[in-house]
Amino acid sequence: MCTDSPLGASALLINGTVGVGKTTVAGAVGDLLAEAGTPHAVLDLDWLSQSWPAPAGDRFNFTVLLRNLRSIAGNYLAAGAARLVLAGVVERQEERQQLAAAVGVGLTVCRLRAEPAVIHRRLTRRHDGEPGALRWHLDRSAELDTILSSAAVEDFTTDTTTGSVPAIAASVIGAAGWQ
Image (cartoon, rainbow, N blue to C red; front, top):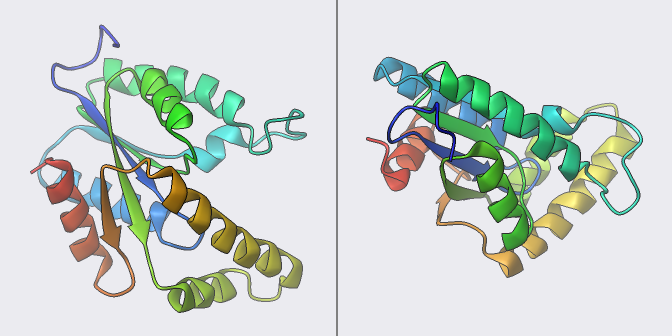
């Protein structure tokens, strides 16, 4: 536990397959927290693992992500953030536990889900003109959905197939008990 963190500080990981809306929903959760006057920080975990090459056996640089998150989360908490909103992927219970240790406060995990056709459309828009990247993301989306379904690391699930982003974010905040 981070001793400099505000009393009752907590973190929320928005988990899910590629194209499901993790970063978008995390940003909207941050907007709603700001409107409510809740001190917070929003972090896209993908950026914390951006280095090349990834070490053997650590395909997505999770070890680097944890090191970076430990420092950044501690800084935000010491500056008064009461909520940490994280957008990223954890595939196993062990990774969830490591992520919780890195943030140093209680961690709730929300898994976002969406119909495969919707994810396919989102990824097609995102990777327009990038056929190689599109193929990788489509393949990874299906692979990751299977992994996440088996791992069941989430505390609750929210569907992003339909509905406005602010409504989905409000649902996530409610399910996390952050009202």
